[in-house]
Amino acid sequence: MLEDEGERDRRDFPGARTLGPALGDGRLSGPPTPNTPTTPTPGAGQAFSYDPPAVEAAARRTAMGLSNPEYCHPDNLEDLKAEIPHLAAKGDRFLLQMKISTLIKMESNYIKRASQDKGRSIEETLAKNQDAVAASPIPVAAGFDDRNGSLHPARFLPGPICSAQELWLQARRVWGSSGPPPVAAFDLASIGLAGHITAKGFAALQDPGSSSLSLRLFDVANVTTKVEASKRITLSASSDSMEVGDSLKEASTLYSFQQALRAVRELARFTMPWNHSFAALEGFLVCNSYMARDLGNTNSHAIGVLAKFCDHIFELNASRWRASKHFLDINELGSTWATWLASRGGPISQRAGSAAHQAAAAGSGQSSGQKAAKPAKPKAATPASGGQAAGRAQGAGGAQAAARAAAAAVPDDICQRFNKNKCPNAATGNCTTAAGLALRHVCNYITGPNTKCLQPHMRILNH
Image (cartoon, rainbow, N blue to C red; front, side, top):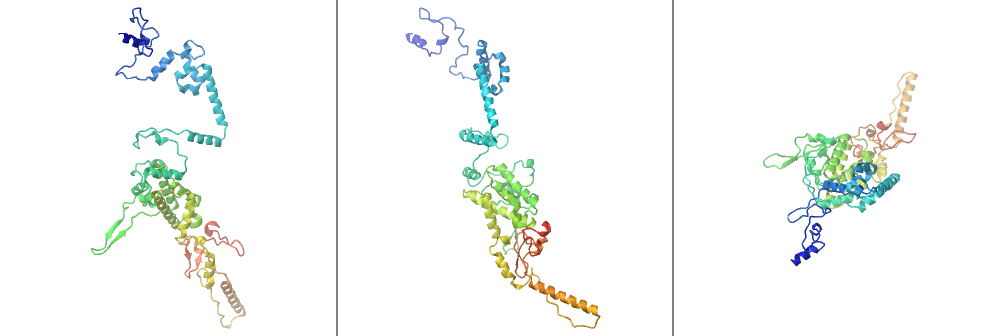
């Protein structure tokens, strides 16, 4: 009994606050005092629950403003929120427990900071935000994501500000040598690319290490092709088989090429937002006007060269992904283009010593594959009138003078068909005459008595 009485006298005894004054005989009696909380203490098997509306209601009942005019009265809380809108989100409990003067001062300080931020330049604001990003990492909670209706909030985090190459390498460490299982359920119709991608294109692009990615898989003209896979035809029972390539064709116009490359970039944005290799390739081609300086006009031959170059870059980036290396950025693409085009008979302007080679090949005395006119033999005089004889003599002398001028002229190594937009070698620039003379694809427009334009464009399109 004495031990029970001792336990009741302790200050941390849960029921001590609800007990009445002790009687003389040591027994406790009497009802709880009016100030005793009526909320029961959770006991065994009783869970504690937090009800925000109930807490706010209790805060209104116990607000200091009921008895102290320096605090806001609960009946005037909505009017106070209208005066301090930036603090209204902190909750009723906060506003009722702070003095009105303190709340007004906090609101004033907030407005001053906002005015200072507006006075800063955009550059200062961006730099400040960047520092805040490094100092305030965002915690990411665990959750689930089905890539459709239930998306994890981490998908909507602000974009990374590291280098594109570092982003590429971090994705390589996450996904390994191959990407996620490919799907074809992306909403490409919303951006105007419905029906631009074949099934092979969906599968090849979603594997960053795939070497089968080709621009032909993204040409809208190939989507409707029924037979995409290669066929095998047996000639006879004892003979070997012959491979027949697939029916996919290269882009033939600049518009179809641009649309195919755009489809590659946009599908990569849907599937791999961290992969900027395709945007780098497109940016390189746009900055160089789709290599018009090297390829001349954008005919079907030039477009075919560009499409093959894109396939070459796709393969190089895939091998770099497998080797955990950086993708080709816009600076590396320039040297890659020069090397790739020169190895395939690139423009004559990129060959070393081309002028000396052309001068040596010009020793035959022929001009653009055309034989020099032979001097006309003088014919025996026949009886005729004086006027006819003089006319024939004058014509013979003019022909001989023209023949001598043609024989003494320096051979012209400029392709005439190129300047008429009729040269079949305009895409590669590897053009020669039947005699082996290398021809240049430059403009032959005459700008002076002994000068020509010599720019890498066609005369018929620029003069």
